[in-house]
Length: 315
Ligand code: SF4
Ligand code: SF4
Image (cartoon, rainbow, N blue to C red):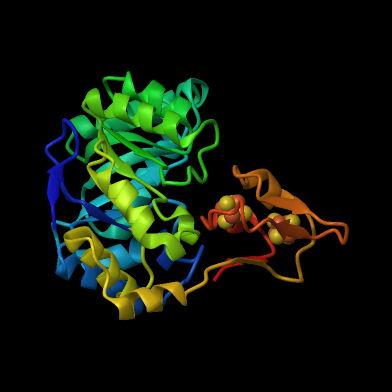
């Protein structure tokens, strides 16, 4: 496994970052021991970096793994916009991971200069905690080229977690080429870059070699977060990151795994999920229930977090 410092920080991370969203209640919702075992397998194979978020509900798995792998690099994210909400989300991360510091804390889903301005108070709070040693690095996650470009020029931002994949899936305000240019700018400004959705949330698994070849040859990324739910996925991804190959039996296991978003028939058509989805993948159909356009859906599961009826599942 290759290890690189995240931009101008002193945080040394593996090229493969464990994307933990897929384990938790927004997706597979694995039992605690099972989820922790998948992460532990990745760590045993050289992955030292895990991505989570306040929203994901995956701190308990990480807490289990931290009991034996104390130096695992943990990145989390928060929707906080002021001191109070920033403090709440940071305290929750510390309490639920069982550690007195967190390596990386990001403003979640930033869209551009305006949202960065709107979350300024929270960012100031996280920067102050960084000065106290409670956070090692701060930054943003984003699906928008405008946010990457804006954060690239902010000296107080250490890390950017942008979306990128060879089909340009999920980039809200531009093309793949425009996102590549924005990330290049940020990289050259010394930002630590770790990419999300290199496999398009699962849509590109059938083209996994092409998807990984593209992202692994992209020269402006220090690490790449990939969601994993099963031990086979861990073996396959580590194998590709280390040798550029995936054993045929593992590839077959991956391709047989067809993840989809399901709307249950007790949906009441309130529309909250439609508003929440930044990809425009949801609408209300003529029967008055939510309907998903699978080709637009990135399987992030964020819509499920706003459904009071628990009618959305990514399986
Ligand atoms: S939030 Fe839940 S109940 Fe409301 S429309 Fe979406 S799936 Fe249906
Ligand atoms: S429909 Fe839900 S899971 Fe799919 S992209 Fe939108 S928010 Fe994410």
